[in-house]
Length: 413
Ligand code: ATP
Ligand code: MG
Image 1 (cartoon, helix red, strand yellow):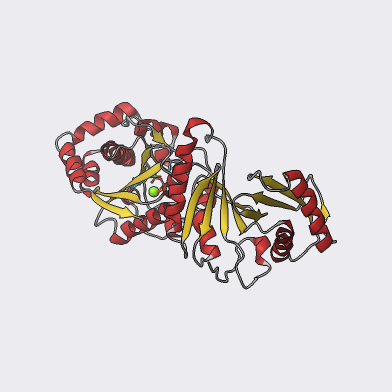
Image 2 (cartoon, protein in one colour):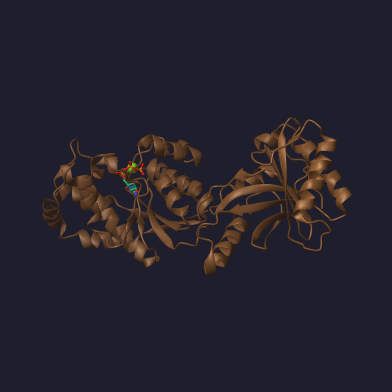
């Protein structure tokens, strides 16, 4: 097995390029919360599946295995370290990624040499404190964990007298795990946390081209929920480019969630009909109610257990408490609004982190803004709204049905 040269992404590893990538595996850490008990294997199996899927994008071949309550990613070909870490950092359920050097058991002396070399490669500056944390999973190893800690501590101090032991708050926690092979690691690269996608059912995201809804989808997917999406398109008032922008956003979110089934619904006729028949200051809220109704119909047909929107209290007229109540009133399924208490800046921070921001701010029109009234109601009255929706009785069911029948499905991955 040859591992080709790579450059390190982890800051502390970055300072030195060793010519040969010494890492052969990654130990995957996952949060223990929700993982205990008889459902643990479901969580782990879903995580393994998501890791395998994510690694298809990385440059290299890998084996993902679950042993002794741990998940390892072993490289079985040359691989790009940066690519691999980046792919793993998008798998929900991973709390930490430890680049591991694995060596055969050739006796303690050889292990000592390998550990000394490891420290030299990873920490060019030796003015650091350390602690050895050995774990002897294979009980026939001649030294027990305590003995390995002490003996290896001595070997390291002999090699690098400038290093010091600190058992309470060491700069370097050097893990040595004795298993079929011996694993050496000390770095933990943070993962995204959350739960593996697929462990929490499925929900329908109302995905627009804005900043908020991609973030909302990301946040619910992070809790293990698979995502489908629906986009309301109003050609010719909204352009093909506006649709492509939504597909691009779905693609970015799909990096975390896996493939997204995106339903593109032609909303033009419904929108025009509402425009003709209803008071203009109530236009947005009535449109939002029809979006929710249609999204729910598709959601139910696709076995989704809820809807997701990017709404946040008070952000715009259609998101006051009154407006949200009126919008929500048409839904039977629960509507998840993960951004409900977030300020715009907090949402922007997440969108930058997940790399949707630059796409979201591209200036393409949105169907909600095109027909928007100068002074939309901020405190819609449900009774009036319902009464005005009666103006639509003649044609609206047929228009909704046509919109559903002409649903364009795009599988985005
Ligand atoms: P976003 O940044 O997500 O577009 P926004 O601040 O522009 O949100 P609104 O236009 O009021 O807010 O939309 C509120 C929510 O309704 C959005 O977050 C999204 O979930 C949904 N939504 C709005 N327009 C559309 C659309 N054209 N297609 C699908 N969903 C939409
Ligand atoms: Mg919007």
